[in-house]
Length: 355
Image (cartoon, rainbow, N blue to C red; front, side, top):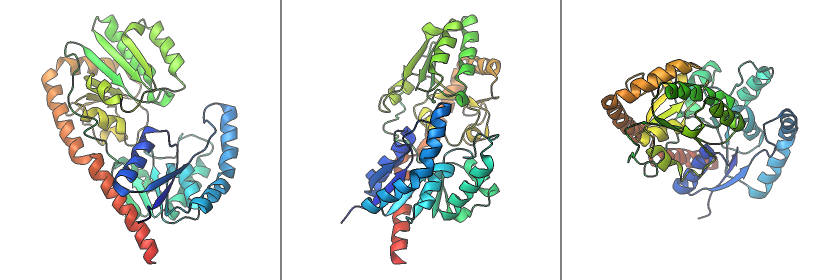
């Protein structure tokens, strides 16, 4: 039997996208074709060029569709690739909202246009992915037909991200796995660890990933006199990540906005205790001093206090990480969840063929 083809519109290099596509190939026996914008999104000149590329994108996508003849198109971000999927002419369409809302930044002058684009994408989609409950709030506000919405995270590979934690129990072994962008507030984390250093509390801080803030953050670590205790790994292979998480006892993430974080699930799966910012996307999964800790946005002094509390309360942490692992096994199992997703895709294609 001939393999069914899916056209994926989105940034295919992202770990989140790779997980999605690999699941479709492994559990759905789909062939995946990809298309993405080539112009980087950083820098004023690049942003102008990217807008021009976006305006011409639909013609390139339709040309690719004519050659490849995909059975379905899927896309990430309702205000960009999701809109292009809606214009593609292919049915069925599945689009995924990536954040709490894709209408970001919230004070952007292009927000009215983004709302129009998003509304069109929502209307044309046959299936809308909400990777977690927090995403449905903005969908309901936008009057989305919620019968088209599948609320389910892609999940993580629980074999790959096992629970054999080997962190040194005698000191804080913290890890940050978010992209080095301003919205993830790595500077707040560094300032907090500078206070720990001043207090004579031993730690090692591993910061994984790349981004526009890398040079500035390295300079800040130097200025705060903690550069010898902070390890900037740069971008790493996803296959290396589980070992680094298992060598850490505390996971930190301080974003100012969040949808559903696969990084958080990975930490919870590897018995790495989560301390995260007190925002809606994190509160869907973390209850303060129940299975992790919630920190007010940009409050590095509070982060310091909570880090010390967490490290001193070892029994509490051990119970919390055990419960977190059970939660991820039940709710974010990649094998279970991706099988549900691929079955839905096959149903949509089959339903179209019947019509």
